[in-house]
Amino acid sequence: MQSLGELCYEFIADMVRDTVGPEAMRFMPFIFTLFFFILAANLIGMNPYAFTTTSHLAVTAAMAVFTILVVIVAGIYKNGLGWFKLFAPAGLPAVMYVIIVPIEIVSFLARPVTLAVRLFANMTAGHIMLKLFAIFAAFLAAKGGVTALGIILPVFATMAIVALEFLVAALQAFVFAILTCVYLNDVYHVEHH
Amino acid sequence: MEAEAAKFIGAGLASFALVGAGLGIGSIFSKYLEGALRNPSAAAGQRTNLLLGFALCEATGLFGFVLAMIILFAF
Image (cartoon, rainbow over all chains, first blue to last red; front, side, top):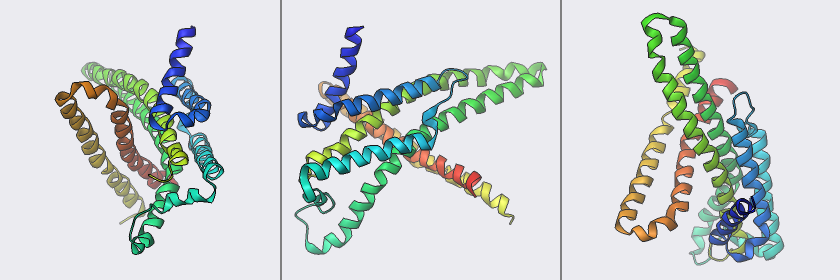
């Protein structure tokens, strides 16, 4: 049991150390919580009759907005107003800043949106796909006769999709956590963005 | 044309996002395999980036799905 806990800790700790650096270890509990909360919510949703909370935009958007607020607040706390140099990378001709700064701002503001929609869409799309194939199987079974033998195809497809969904459940939790790490990178490395 | 029909056509067109997502995921895994076979010792260290790239790429396809859902149900 203890080795399992240490395994979980090491997994997240290595992730934070590799992507951001040892100075970001103070955010490690946050990312640890985020990862295991999403993983648990996704896996609970894989139980029959259970509800997938992460398939709702309100839940994922709340987490994504909080993540991006952490990045902004921590960035300003650590670097002061110099943090806004993030939007204007150094060493460009002056004319380029007219184009680059709006692009950087938009790409920064798109982060919480993509973070929320990615998790939401992955979980929703997977469950809709499962439901479609299950309904297809039910239709074929209701036809009766030789047609009912065709039920094998959608049933096996459903099984394959369930396996894929378990992979996606873990992968999306991982992706959410690692993207949080990548965004936290901006807090500590403003200069070489 | 009826507005209802145009809605369904639009939702169908939104699924063209899958073209890009499919191409992207294919190229990510093919390039990873190419690199991994050339230098197997460096392959394990890049698995994080592989999964990250895969998820980022897959998300673009799912944005198309979200778009289709918005077209179908939000308007």
